[in-house]
Image (cartoon, rainbow, N blue to C red; front, top):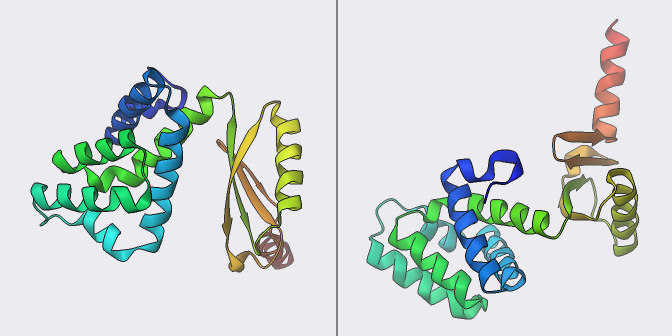
Length: 184
């Protein structure tokens, strides 16, 4: 499957494309995407899981045992759990974060969505997120799925990335621009 953005060109992209094709054939895109989001959260929260996925000294057998042990407690879809085993067997667990991102892009494209990354100085409430999604959808002419991050260094405002576009209304950037203008 050829996709925009050259997803299939990288190693992670090839793995993500293969997983996506299997998920599409089995009508399991949603459950696999949910499982990968769960895995992504677990990677963010667990140093042990990050070590499992990045350790160059872990044997294939131990990596397989490790991913098998986490699949059930995380409630992973069987296809996602099996795919994790393939990554472990091929010693490609370090590619997991990139595979998760690439699969998400493929799934959003399949649904006709565009994705946006929103970084705010403070957590946004549900009403603010809904308002932002509606405004972004109006601007791009299609549904927009958002990933939210908080970066207190922004001081206030937002940074929104949609594809290669960036809208930066952060106070940090405004202060930097003002300081630059004052230098002459």
